[in-house]
Image (cartoon, rainbow, N blue to C red; front, side, top):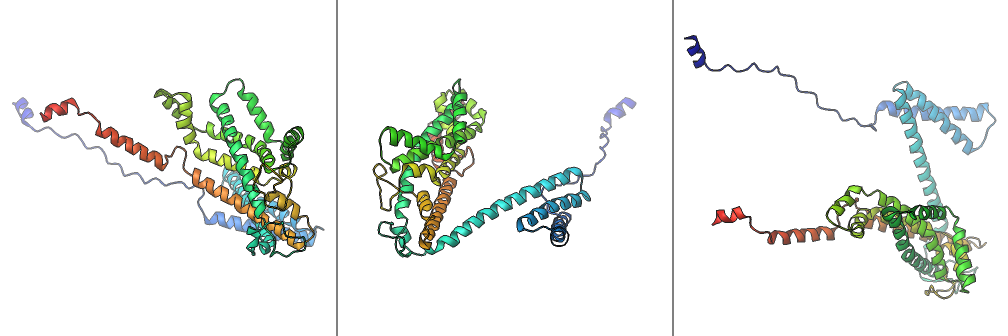
Length: 401
């Protein structure tokens, strides 16, 4: 009877597990969070260092000079800041905050120096930029005593554009091929080529001008021209483009190469369709760095291009002046108008460099591996074509029948 009752009784539910309180939501740790303690420590250290530096300079020590004063203030500021943070945080936090203060102050100093140089150039060259003839005329009919309403830098702008265009057309393919050889092909010759490129990177700019001067002008008997200047700029650009491009190519993950090889692609096909598109933004930056390296150089152009106040749009014949050479020549003149023209040309050169970096940002600003609009359209077209020609599965055909 007991067995019957036990079989008829409903099964008892297992005991419920004890309920645990919900864990507290995770708090995201912000490494650079702004706190009042950190702000007070920073401001207090700066103020205390300023007061102590003034006391040492003006009342105790026989010191003078603005540079020494601010250098002493900076050292005192770092000492006070380390002591103030040590009262609140641990040893590791003190080191982190002191190093962060050094890095931020170094960055601010660099920005200040750049803005100071640009501001001084604008101040000295703005009188020349106010006249439209500065961009539309040459110095062919302008004398040393003529005002700023006469003459301009049109011939120097044309010379710089042509010389940089030729140098870029020659240096970029050679530099990229050298980078592909060192990063993708390798072999026994990769190390000597890399050593040669690194040695060329550290050479002074005047060496490139002397090399083209001795090879093209003296050996082959050619006259100074814009093409000779472009060759000197090419010699300067090749090692920078090759070295920077090699670094960018080595940043491409090997998984992409292995996936391409697994699909049956050859090495050149993998390099052309996988490696180069992935490193597109970095390669564009490398090219712009090489152009920025060469566009402002004066020594190679001074030895190979010659100087001329006339317009010469043919880089293969006759002297052809450029913006760096124009600045070098006219900034040494005693006339105020010529010095203002030189600083105006410097502003034009700065604007050209900023334009190059803007174009590089637009062309290569995408993330590594991000597809372009044309590639996305092609992939979408291929998917639609594959969808229209997909055969119907056998089971679906029987079911429909």
